[in-house]
Image (cartoon, rainbow, N blue to C red; front, top):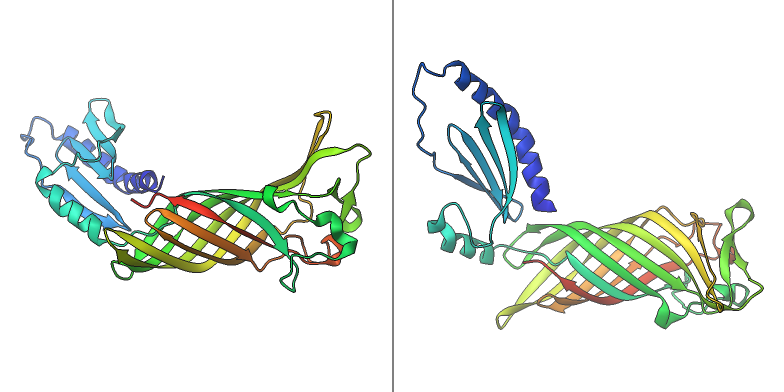
Length: 313
């Protein structure tokens, strides 16, 4: 996705100049011979991505990674086409070895990938034991899970093995209640218990957040791979939330709403791993619910731990 974004950005910057050039050539057609010789391709880096630009009198080619954009002049005007190249197909094959060397020597962080773990929350005293007056918030720990898709990243290297990593991710949290209850947004937005008359098979609060980390990462070479250690702040914005109750007879009730959840939250994340497999943990210093609207007027601070499979190559 980041590579496609780079292509679109460079396309916007170059499209206007290319069109003006094509128009001028049409007006002088017949007065001078147009050279068919290709110009030498230009190469530069944007972040960790090598961008190749090849241009002649009738075509403009741009390539980053295995994605490309071609702008070809025709009588009807410029024609645009997007291309996907094999990973080992570059315009200048003589530079393959140099490109692979540069790729091996640059810093590449570990953020994009999939994460699966457990989530819960703690009181301001860092205790998972909740007061008896809000025991309806007690979770079934083994069934309260989170799933994350980190879909884009930017690596900012300080050295080959040290650098900052940022990006975007989607964070799903399922808070599975242990009791035969759910929650409801009551008067003045205060969270209260909801006790159905029938027996529940399962009941939960589910949230979806967009996350943005800023991680300082260290990579220690071990054999032919790396031991990776990283930590830093992380922020998130809420995209949606709902409650769900499933009764013993299979009847399901799902209710969408904001449930007085904080729209923005921030905290800290840390991860350690070998190669592309990692353990991660995230703790938010922003309460799950808005101040003064949480259950029993008690602030609950969410956290999650789990394993990750990253795709930094």
